[in-house]
Image 1 (tube, rainbow, N blue to C red):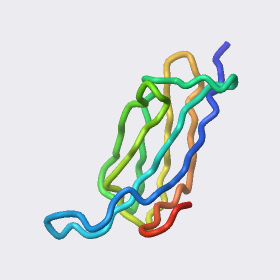
Image 2: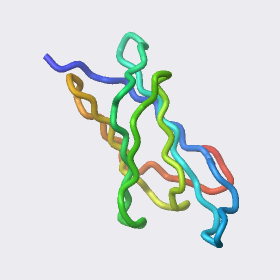
Image 3: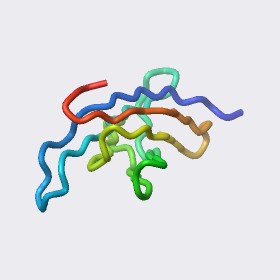
Length: 102
């Protein structure tokens, strides 16, 4: 039987003005834990949006944290978290806003 992961998503501003005139960006901070509250390092976290070019992805660190930075603000993202042995978690309409925490 596959386990379910409990995923906490917190959208935060992770940047200010970026060098080379790329403007203001935002980011998504994700903490990944199982149903017992134990962190799940090694999980793959990705964010994609039809309003942004490409997909951003990272791997959860030993503390259970994943940061996706350099995301276009005012865009809705589909955040996916996957780890072998667990159900894949999908969070739709995660809004990245510049200058605020959601």
